[in-house]
Amino acid sequence: MKKILSIPCSFRAYTIPFLHNTALFLYHLNMEIIRLENKDNSENNRVLRQKSKPVKNISGEIRKTAQEMLDTMHRDKGVGLAGPQVGLLKRIFVTHAEGDQPRVFIDPSIIWTSQDQVRYEEGCLSIPGVWAHVTRPEKIKIQAWDEKGRAFTLEASGLLARVILHEYDHLEGILFIDRLDTAGRAKVLSKLEKQKKAG
Image (tube, rainbow, N blue to C red; front, side):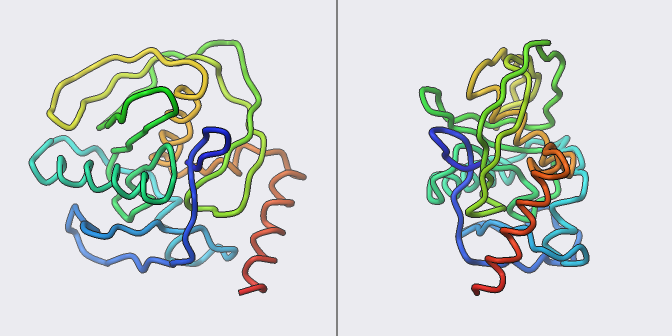
């Protein structure tokens, strides 16, 4: 996610080819962000639209990847980053919301959301230059494992809850623009097309 007042994702002009192999770790040093393209059959879109698989084994390799994801997120001025955004189709994401500490979530499960909903502007590192208001639960409870293999349960509200929900969506192959109404989504896609033509 991009910082918008405090919501995730800042963007680069790089398109990342997805590596066709079975390796768990596709990118390490100098991770780059996979960007959504305005065409359904692109490799980037295929990666971003897939549902991620469980990590299961939290190894030293996973810990290294988590740190590299945090570094990449900070480099691109985001407050959240999920595995699929760097070509890793595993259930892992990192966050660093304003006023909070850096966090790693591995194989997370959202176990509760409040009935109270809040509308707030979001952006995404995978969709640079695009922001839109999205309605999400104000509070959540999540269970996950950290990079050291320790299970934890976290109750979050406000910005942190929104960042977590945004990144969790990435693990399900869902982008924030999917939560817009038809008119809002059409507006975003039109902007992406204009960005493409502008080069």
